Image 1 (tube, rainbow, N blue to C red):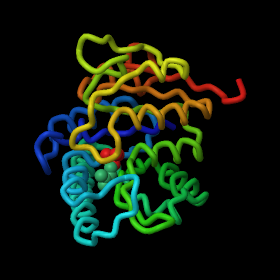
Image 2: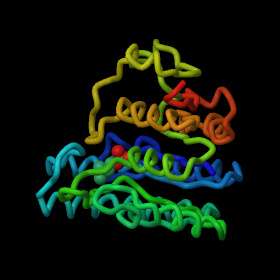
Image 3: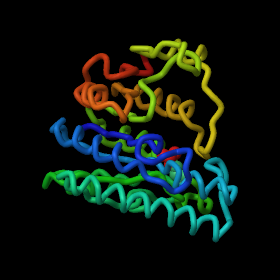
Length: 254
Ligand code: IP8
């Protein structure tokens, strides 16, 4: 099984609030279908959730007590989820979508999540969940889809993880001049610098790379690929080189 994170930068037009990227979703749906790999999909909130979370000052680090902010952010995430599910479904992917709260209790992934996902996948349905405003241990907070991917990876030990965004992979510095790294290892992390995060309340690429390192530390390969490019996404799904940047799985003891 492979866990794919469909980043908000692929499925929405990040610079335009509340706008989905219909063409990109239809194209990636075809690639996902053609890959024929058993999938779990987690999607980001893009110009839906991040827009409203930003507008109402909700932050991933802190508990939030703004009922209108929570309601509006959730509403926009649900809207995106429904639109995405519909397009994936129309492309022939049989999606079973559910909110992450179905898997968590007091901010922690429950072990019964394993059974939920296994039962869904047993009959060739594709589990789909998403970054959301979640009820955690101490009230509501924004939970990034990246954190859900990390928690699911640790619980389910998939073959690999694919983070799909609108760039080809990770480079040492932001900007087009710095080439995409084929592989990234622990020792290189401190050398990386990231562009300033805009329209994103959960920390953008930097926090994604940190979550990816935690996943790789469980012995699972993590790929960063461009979800807008069919060839690259397909290679990453298949675990082939040139799919983007890969962080090879390792064990902390080594
Ligand atoms: O886009 C963020 O999820 P992400 C969730 O996966 C909300 O980081 C509600 C902004």
